[in-house]
Each structure stands twice: as C-alpha cells, then as structure tokens.
Image (cartoon, rainbow, N blue to C red; front, side, top):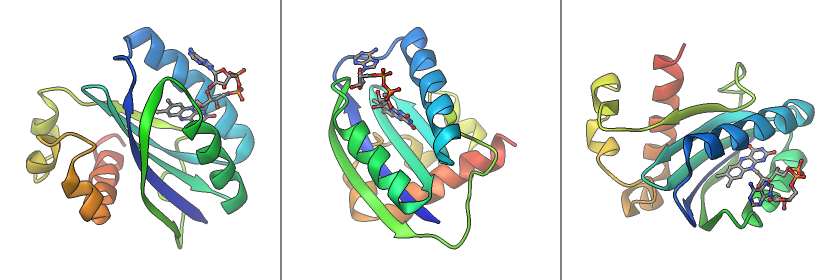
Length: 139
Ligand code: FAD
C-alpha cells in the first residue's frame, strides 16, 4: 500500500457546490482506481491523503498537480504504508471551520494553523495525525 499526503492552496475559494462537484468526481474516479483517502479544506487550503496501489497513487497525484483550480502543491509524505487507513472512504472530506477544534480534542493547536503551515511541512507526522484523527471522529 502506498500513501501520499500533500497540501495546496485554492486559486480562488471553493464554494460548497464546487467542493461537492470535486468530491463527487474524486469518489467516482478513486473507486475505479482502488484509491481511498481523506481531504481537508480550510480557508482556501487543502490537505489530502491518498492511498492505494503505488502506480495509481503516483499517477493521480501527478494529475491533481496539474489541476488549475489549486497551486503550490507540496508533498509532505510519500511512503509505503503497512495497511490502508481509510478503507471506508473513496474520499473522506471535512471542511474545517471555527467549531472544528471542539470536535478534535487534543488537536486544537494544529487546527488553528493553516493547512499549509510550516509546522506540517517540517513535521509531516503531525499532518498524518491530524488526518487520522478525523477518521476516528467521523466513524
Ligand atoms: P474530467 O473531469 O473530464 O476533467 C478534465 C480536465 O478538466 C482536467 O484537467 C481537470 O483538472 C479539469 N477540470 C475539471 N473540472 C474542472 C473545473 N470545475 N474547473 C477547472 N478545471 C476543471 N481527482 C480524483 O480523481 N481523485 C481525487 O482524490 C482528487 N482530489 C483532488 C483534490 C484537489 C484539492 C483538487 C484541486 C483536485 C482533485 N481531483 C481529484 C481532481 C483532479 O485534479 C482532476 O480534475 C480529476 O481527476 C479529473 O477527472 P477526469 O480525469 O475524469 O477528467
């Protein structure tokens, strides 16, 4: 199993409808590719975890990098991973708002940060912990 986590910034803020359209397309495509994962969106920034067969994940990341709706894609983590973490989700999704810190106890410090914060870039395990925490609360 291969896992990638990246962050990026929307060129323009995504509306609810645009996020829904993006998710519908992602879930459909990912289901076909045996890719699962999680997408976070906060204040125009994205953090996404993609996992699945290595070739499929790398090809999808390459495609996503070319998407003109966002820019500044920075891959935080790319590694072989023992098991699939998000097997229930072709693409889980959480839009973070001001209430999010209430839901994710112990992670309020992370949530106050932009998803593209240096703290995540310098310490990608924090990004992974954040994503995995959403898996727990969204069950
Ligand atoms: P089509 O949907 O036919 O798209 C063809 C082209 O049009 C592509 O170049 C696409 O980038 C572009 N495009 C499509 N819709 C729009 C639009 N509304 N505005 C501008 N250009 C557009 N795709 C996945 O399959 N799985 C994912 O997990 C995934 N995650 C994403 C996360 C982020 C943050 C972003 C920005 C995009 C993500 N995408 C994801 C979308 C991905 O970049 C491609 O748009 C999508 O995979 C293309 O699907 P398709 O091959 O069926 O082509």
